[in-house]
Length: 388
Image 1: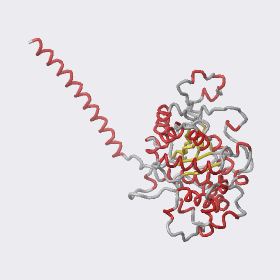
Image 2 (image 1 turned 180 degrees about the vertical axis):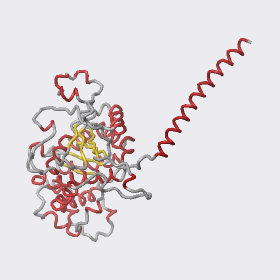
Image 3 (image 1 turned 60 degrees about the vertical axis):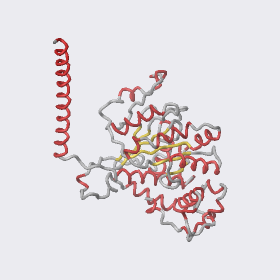
């Protein structure tokens, strides 16, 4: 998808720093940016650039197309319907594919990674109806130290015709990665639904009075649709990971790697989307260094499928006015998620498929039954032999 969205004039790289369209480009104060600004379109060998310079070029690409590209992507998302980006393969028709009515994007990450803030930003960027401009998640409703205890389904477009929804999940614990992977696996295999309660070991201290009674009574209600997860976004707090590394603690980075490379996410889509959230806690150089270290640890490219987002809308600011690059990153990340989802749909099960499935189960049951009989007969024969 990058190739579709990056038909920008690279020969204007040297003009980026003076561009009047961009109001927030935090990376331009980082070291070696001047070296990137001097690169021309005809650079002899782009592959010879260092990871840092390649990252600068990618960030500058986003800055160049942030304003015009945002309007284009927002329009594509507003008219999107599930299956629009499906590509015919293997001679199958679209009618033969098992395409859900709503594509489900799941946000996962560790506690305080910025998932709820990211949802707030999506509301601001994508749901510009002029009615509600501020935070939409419970974490942005004025509650201090709020922890997402339930799955929350969000229609970030605020449209009844929306072709996708976004799920905010409860954050995982760095000290309980195994438990996190097990819970993630159940979400990816069994699906999720709105107000689904996410209880963990050690939650016995949570007082039920602190949990919304209506949500608690309806967590298993049939009025909420169980949705299959089509694509997952891994949200990582760069400041938290970077500061831990500086202090000699590699646990957050290792836990992030286990989550990002987990089989549950890989089975859904080969390369999950990575969202790096940060605020003003790090300098530009530290943000760049944190992103490069995370990419190196995960074994992925520092410029493909990764988006830096400064989540500001929980304070009421409109993203495209305060940070157009973050606004564009959010829209492009959602667009990429929809592309991935529509190209991962499976064919519908035909009558022949169901017949083979039932026959295989019957054969398995028969095999188990005869194995059990053989075990009993063997035991009886051995007993009779001993008597003789």
